[in-house]
Image 1 (cartoon, rainbow, N blue to C red):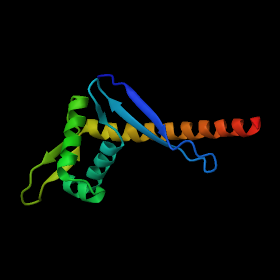
Image 2 (tube, rainbow, N blue to C red):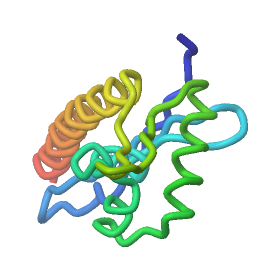
Image 3 (tube, one colour):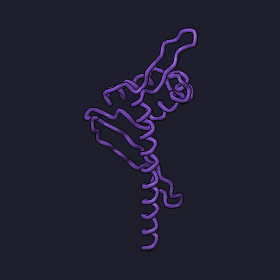
Image 4 (spheres, rainbow, N blue to C red):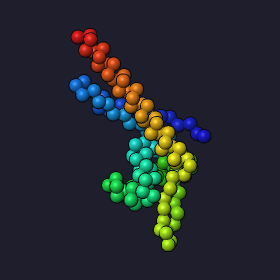
Length: 133
């Protein structure tokens, strides 16, 4: 397995009255970001629908953009994350590869854990700020 730098930035974490946080995770190589929330959601929708086209419709995304995102992610990881079955009597189907499913499952876990940590720490920060007043 190749190792990738992980960049995480916290967005919308500066609202003390609502105490809501939002976290975005991106996986980058030396050239660019190749995996993040957009590709993650695309893969989840492909998995649910069995179709890139149906996933695009569900997300309001252009088919060409989806293919570009999938190609960039596959190139970045160095392996296929989806596999396609050509049409015929039963029609075509798109499925996640073993690696693609592993990435989706692990990314969901990472997102959940980072969101929990971020929310906890932001809440502690505001508590300390309010106690210092």
